[in-house]
Length: 157
Image 1 (cartoon, rainbow, N blue to C red):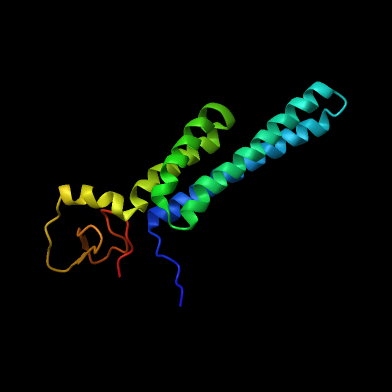
Image 2: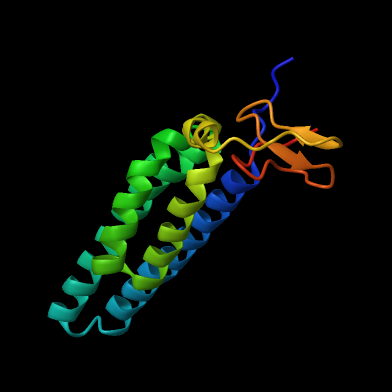
C-alpha cells in the first residue's frame, strides 16, 4: 500500500502560508483585470492592467509549480530556494503582503526538512532524560507531552 509521507508541523505551516500568499496574489490579479474591464473605454489603462494581470497569472503559476507543489510532495529542501526568491521579488515588485507570507513560509521550511537540521542538532546535543521521547531523526530528547520534535519538527509517536 502506498502511504503519503509524514509531514512535520513546520511543513504544514509552510504549505498554508504559501497558499495564503497565492490567494492574496490571485486576488490582486483579479483586481488588475477588473480595473482593465472598468476602464475599457481608455485603451492605455486597459492595456496596462491586462499586462499586469497577465504577469500576475504567470507569477502565480511559477510560485505554484516551483514552490508549493514541491512542498506538497515533501521536497522541502527543493522548495527552499524558489520560496526565498519569490519572497524577495514579491516584496519588492508584485505584492508586499503575499511576499511577507512567502518569507514566513521560507522560515517554516527551515524546520520542515529533518535532514537539514540533523547537523545543527548534532552540534547541540540534548542530554537524554528519563521519561522523554527521543527523535529518531535528530536524536533530540523531547518531553513526553510533545507531539513534534523540538529540534527538527519530526512527528513523534
